[in-house]
Image 1 (cartoon, helix red, strand yellow):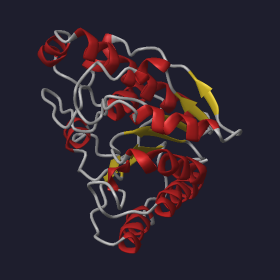
Image 2: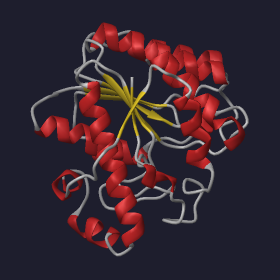
Image 3: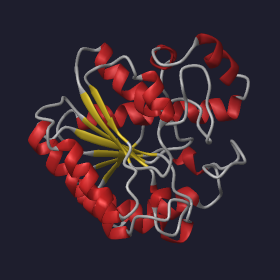
Length: 253
């Protein structure tokens, strides 16, 4: 499994929100480095055309006014795209990035997001005629409204934001949604660890994250020839963030 990461993501000075909190990336990377089967690769920033497939030119121009946040957001979008490209080879990939992206719509954003990293990654593959269909699981505590907004016209893109209250029902909802899907070109995960039982979502356990990763690996092997990738969204309970991300990646790999 490839871990897509750039040391620039350690820099928490690009913003003053929860996603930019000092210590957040530091809580994740050492846990992933313990897994010898994971290889780290460095991304490059996204190109302007990649962003403009998904966002309004005026919104992009406005984002440039905050140079430090803009540079970090371009690197996050580039990392998501690299994870997608690796995933298309059949090797799973997970991008450890910030700022997150699933609340970034075509011409606006909220929830600590700038560009919709998932939409940028998938639309780049689509523009290259590498995919015609996709499945997105977003297990963040908050619905990925930006992803849904940008990809709304793509009829062969299936998006699930589970909402059931107990972890058992939550996992069953994922199973029930994916069971009828026979084939997609890629399985993509918006991995939001704020759905953790000690975070704002107050729902999932560490083992649940492992199970979600394993469910998505199994689904990808059945429906997309193993093509799968994931990108980091939320997750703010720092004492357990590293072990939760590791659990998901172990299941997903």
